[in-house]
Length: 136
Image 1 (spheres, rainbow, N blue to C red):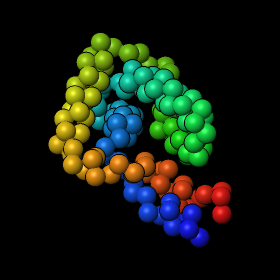
Image 2: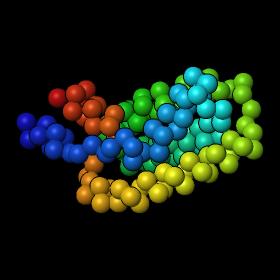
Image 3: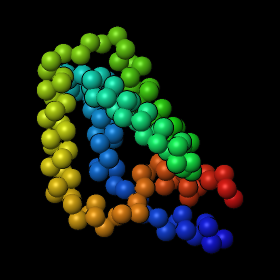
């Protein structure tokens, strides 16, 4: 019972503080033709970054490997598959840089929120630990 209480006390990181969700939103807007800039370039970078994070999680024997794989399948792998037949234009790279700069400004504006949530975990991992944990 104490172990269950522990996971319930862990805070959840706000989704707006996770760049992957910004990219996912960009992909949705692109798929619905609401923006013309293709998110393929940043999706590829994100997959490379997440692969490195996955290796670190496996090396550290983290209990969050499964939720990490599941969420990244939905927010990175499925979107990149839908973008396979698209091409990356110079403008897409420029938009990626601008979006990342806006994200960094957003993090600076929300600095106190980030500092106050040192033990917070991403939303899907939070849901997984609280509702779908295999360790019951």
